[in-house]
Amino acid sequence: MTEDLQSRRIAWFASLPSVLPVEMTGIWRGEGIPSGHPLDGVLENLQWFGKRFHADLRADALLFQWRPGRLVAIEPAFFPIRIAICLNRFGKTTVARNWFFHFHRMVLAKRTTASVKLRTIEGAETAAMVYDRQPIVDVFRRIASNEVAGMMVVEGDHRRFFFRLRRVDLPGKAP
Image (cartoon, one colour):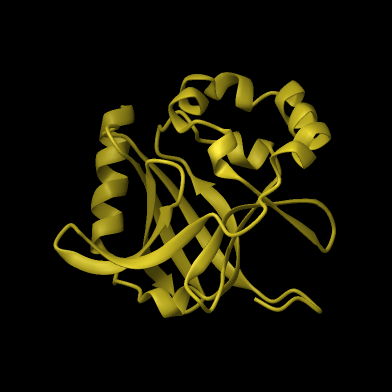
């Protein structure tokens, strides 16, 4: 069942139009798209907000929001992706959420953590966010004018994690 759902999500994603890197500029609210991936539900449990893409095509790969109006960028390198995938059940617990909230200051990003580039996937060029210190690439395709689908590709893992991003305007916040 999980492989079938993964296959359907991959086919759906491939059917969507490409996105240019410059079109990603701004702040985007994210949510997971269930696909049978071990990380389904983990980011939401940890109060993931989304992603921020800067005009210089640098990005804050992981933004969290624990207080209204305050976004916090986390350094993804502190969470080895292969370990995170293995510990996915823990990531869905209240204990994990509380731990993450209380210790997030230790893993704050000091600068942007990824870059946005054109990448070819499934025969089409589209915007992709390449993490600086993780073997991860998030590939993007357009759903609507202010909404994109994301597919996280972890080097060496055939499974894909899917999410959607919706562009948001936060009062007093510049992209």
